[in-house]
Image (cartoon, rainbow, N blue to C red; front, top):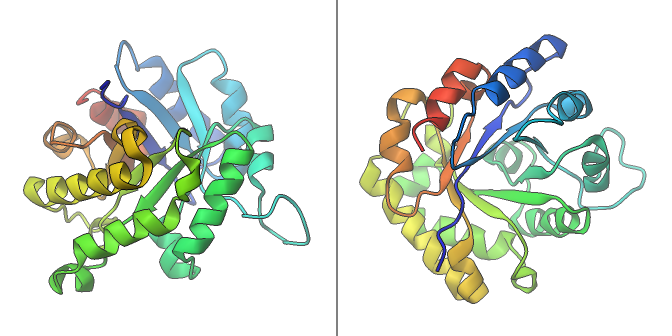
Length: 247
């Protein structure tokens, strides 16, 4: 069976303005012949401008979240169809910062995943354990439970990715050992094939959590690692290209 195409996605979080478009253009210009798909998920205020600026390039644009509902009285929220209308092709869902800071449950992430598919977006569904859960020996239980709960089984055949982000490694500079990363990615793969059958073997499983040029090669060439969800290192083209070049 064909291996999943790697995806390197940059999550700009609440960073970036008009001047930052230059970093996206520099990233696009430096992609060369990479075998990975590459995306940047900027703040919603930049999606339309970035999509227009990158129209003639191979760099994809994504959103960072969407509402489960298609429309309604939800002040400040953004529907998946609005992201698509602005030029997004992907959307990050269930990021640990949304789960912890906004109380998002697996069921809500699953509903958002359905909404993303309906709008023609490719979801990047995030899962990951806290330090307390890892210390308690529950990392695999927590992560595989999130995979089952956040991805509706009737969506087999759709295009999506899963991003494993150990919560304790995001923005801390800490990184799990390669063995720990592989253990979790293999557990995710087993769960995906259990839920989605043969299609589960084609889903890219990204790693996220303090990925940088200095550790990218070791992480990206580990078993069952099919790309990366990159935070701070994606804000500067030079750093992001260093990670992309490690694929």
